[in-house]
Image (cartoon, rainbow over all chains, first blue to last red; front, side):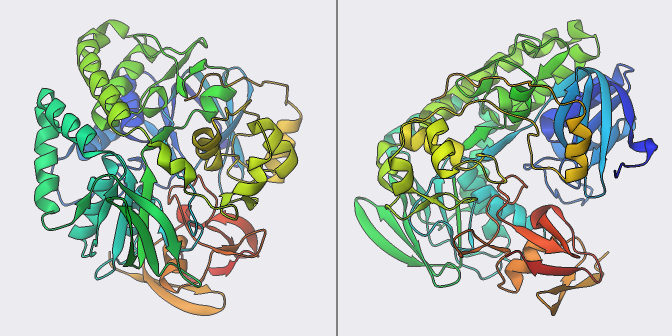
Length: 437
Length: 81
C-alpha cells in the first residue's frame, strides 16, 4: 500500500477545502483568529479558477492581497491534493499523484466552487471546442492564442470576461453569442446601477471589447471539422451562420460543485448547499461558502468565505458586519440567475447521434428511451464514467428535467491503493440530492 | 524564469516554456489527449480537472488529467487509447 509520508498526515482546527477566493478568505480570517488552518486544492496553486495565474507584476489586486494574508497568517497550503472521501466524521481522505493521506479537522469549510455548464450540440466533442473558462485556463497555462480565431458562445457574464482576456492576448473574436435576450440583458444593465463596482467592471470590459461583434438571442448550432474544430454554425437573429474558427469557447453559466458537501450529508435544495447566516450547513461543524451555496461571483464568495472562516474559528460575532454586505451581494446573484436562465430552444440542439455523455459515448437518441437519470445510468452507463456525471448531469437536468441521485464515495475516481485504504472503513454514507431546476 | 522544457508527445519532442501544462502541449502539437469509447479523438474541455476529457498516459501511468500536470523535462506523454 502506498501512503504519503507521515508528514502529510495533518491535523487542523479549521480545514478549508477549495483554494479559490472564498477558500482563501475563509482560511486567512480563521488563521488570523489564531486557529491552525489548512487549505487544500486540487490545482497546483491557490487562486481558484478566477484568480488562476494572476500576473505577479507587483500590482495590488484582491488576489494578491488575499494571497498575502493567507501567507502571513501561517495557513498550511496543500495544493495538488484532491479530497475523495470521508471515512469517518472529522477525517478526510485525499489523494495526489504520489499517493494518499488523511486530514483531520475540528471544523470543516467546504468551498468547492463551481464548474461551467456544458450543453451538447452536434460536433461539441471535437478537439478545440472548450469551455469559455476552460479555454481561458488553457491560455493561462501557456496556450498561445495570438492570431487565433475564437468564437465565444453560451451565456453569462463569464463570456465577456473571457472574450476580453483572449483579445488582450491577441486572439481574434469573430463574434460573442449570448443566448439571453436583449430585453433581459437591458434589464440586467439597468439593475447594475445598484452595484457601482460592477458598472466600472462592465465599462472596462466594454472598452476592452470595442469592435467585437456581440450577438444576443444567439447560440451555437453545430461545430464542424475533421480531426479538430474548423468552423462553427451559430444561430443569429433566427438565421444559421457559418463562421470559420480555430477554437470555440463555450459555456452556459455555472453549476455549483456540491458533490463533496452532498457526500458529507449537507442538505441541498435547488442544486445549492443550504446554509444559515453564519454559513453553517445542516451537518455539525461543517460550513459552506461561495458558489456551492448559489452562483454569485467573486464579491459574494469573498464575503461568505470570510463569514465562514470567522464562524469556524469561533469568532462569529466579528462576522456580523459582513452580513449586510452579503445581503446586497445576494441580490446580484438572483439577478444573474434570472438574466442568464436558459432558453428552451437550447433543448433541441442535440441531434440523435450527438454524444451527451462524453465519458461513455452515450448519444441523445439512447437517452431519449429512458425516463430518469437512474434508469439512464443503469441502461446506458450515462454519468458512470470518470467525470461521474459532472458534465452530463447538469446537461440532462436541463434537457430532460432529470434529477441526479445519490453521491457515492469516492467523489472522484481514485487509485486502487486509495480504494484499498477506503475499503477497510467504507460504510454506506449516501445522501440524496434533492430539488433541482 | 523563462526556461524551457522538452517533453515527448507520442514520441515526438515538444519544447514548451516551463509552467506549461501537458494539456497545452497536446493542443500545441495537435494530438488528441485520448480516444473515446467509440473511437473519437478528444481534447481538453473544462481546463480545470473535472471533465476528464484530457486524460493522457504520462510515463506509463494512465488516466492522468493533463490539464492538472505541468510539463517536466523528459516526460513521456502518449494519447490514451
